[in-house]
Image: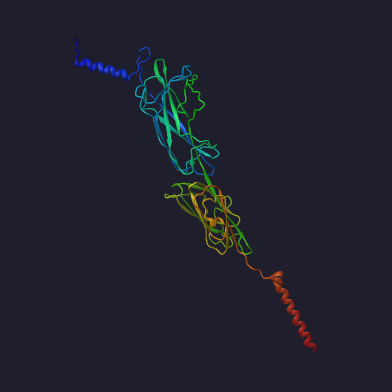
Length: 396
């Protein structure tokens, strides 16, 4: 019986190991593994044009996809699950995508912001031609954000990512990356010189919809003693917001700086932008007069507010139109009072304050004719009476 030396056994083991990890093409040629490159995708948040960009971070994880056999007609290619340890090794990575208050919107009409993410395949090696499938999963939540497009079509937060590796003159080449909605979708043949893949469900965009509400605070003054040029002070408290959230204030129907006229002896500034603190709250004073209003924009679903009018000599009537679901019943009833509170805004809302000051007006000759004229008339009557009396005394 032939004996094997220890060295020959070791060599045989190395050859077997090498064959297990280094694929060989049909002609017996060993492929040199090729490293992946990078591909990109988009993450978009849609919103009202007046809403500010929210503070939110989305994270992305990558897992193996599901392998598939080629169909008998040859139209669809076989699919390898990524990182199977035989035809490919390593997993791609994706950095977080962060949106922050103050970021510039990318849509020209101000209704969206889009950021681009990168899938890094530099740590992945492919050893055979084929289609390699991975699954990209997005996570990250924020109040007011739903995962849907502008048409309210629900978005899948998992997308399949296929890598097409081809044999080009006996060498491996990463020819295409295709992201699509369905993990079980068939892998199509590369089409044309551009190595494009024609898929109806190709989708490289994770879409989100930010739903917000606006709160309008308005003022009217009534009554014969009411001042139409007096500014009335309101204190707005916002709570339940995400830390650092910005709220635009529309001052189109108000003064950015109050005027010192009539009863107004001090100037006050109405800000055009508010920012929630680290605890998600803020407090801000506003001054408006008759027929003026301010609009605080971009309150998400879990954000609430309180409006308090400073004490004054007027009788106050409040009417709330819009979101009444969470507001205090007594405030919504529009009875006398100075405070309106809504724990969570779910619709565009108008809080209308009417201040009335009326006084009883004396009736009679003086008020009917008017001050100076009445005095003159009374003076004339008195003079006539005196003259008549004097004439009578002279005759006697």
